[in-house]
Length: 201
Image (cartoon, rainbow, N blue to C red; front, side, top):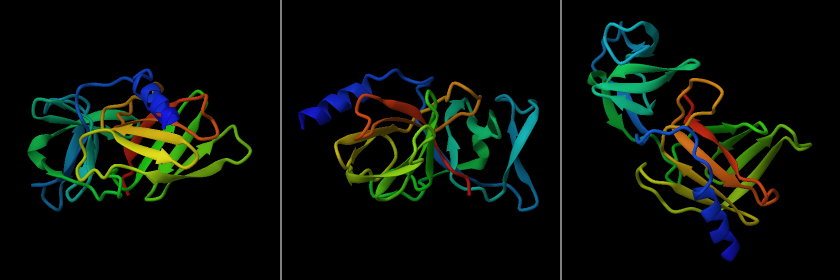
């Protein structure tokens, strides 16, 4: 138990990635005609360049920031803005832990990626001989809505802390909806910090 407390303190005191005060929320597109799309603009104003679009029936849109009546979303390799007028608040399908289904994570120095499901964090370390390693989740508080850190206890003494907040990977302009800090059971000397986003199927 003492070791776990030390790990948790270390994760919460880990250097934060670029963040704003906005807490990630999810929305569905609404009020757009079936033969139309919702424009994603380069800036939060109706005259800005259109850099992408959302389908009239797009769901689980990850919003990572707000500027008045404008919502920040990802568009390709950059951030964009859509009008809240055409968004309706929703809750995506959740895992038992309260994390959204379909979170995909990654980080640098060194490069790694991770997928999270009901029972495991599957960690892909590109420097390791065994590229993909599942770490069973042994305990997690049940979060019925998104809105606070989710702590996953991993078999063997590891821990992962995920927070629904703006996160930057430091290499691109893509806004990510979650930050992840984790200590793996067999790499206790390293805190892996990165970002996660809900995959758009």
